Length: 194
Image (cartoon, rainbow, N blue to C red; front, top):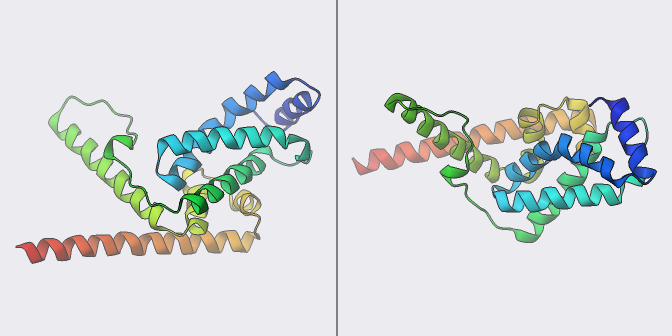
């Protein structure tokens, strides 16, 4: 769906065709869920936050400015809603290995080992993402998970383009530090037990 089609759908919704909103939900449900899941680490919370974000966007659709891209606007709503949730909950959650999605079905032992290693890497990365301060976490997710251009990240976060670039850079740097610290901790723990 391109920007012109989105504008037509939004116009139809604003003219009273509530059923047209399904097209926008179908188009953007997965990226919004991914955002909420990566920010919270919990599928149930992510599903609730996704639904709430779409409800809020529907209620506020009259505020959407014609000629703008819909996705960054929606993403901003979802992001703010998720931030508020995280502020209220203030809990750190861990991700179960089973929650990491891998899309391969294998029948060979080597493939199973690769699949398990992939799940462990997913869990390790998700844990490191959850350890990031939320302003860095959201910037890294927008850039590398959702593959948004820097301009859209700046728009979604309501910051300047240079601010978006800096958040992504600092987020990656901090993520690297967290992963290295975890690796060093594991190496020190394994060497002390020998």
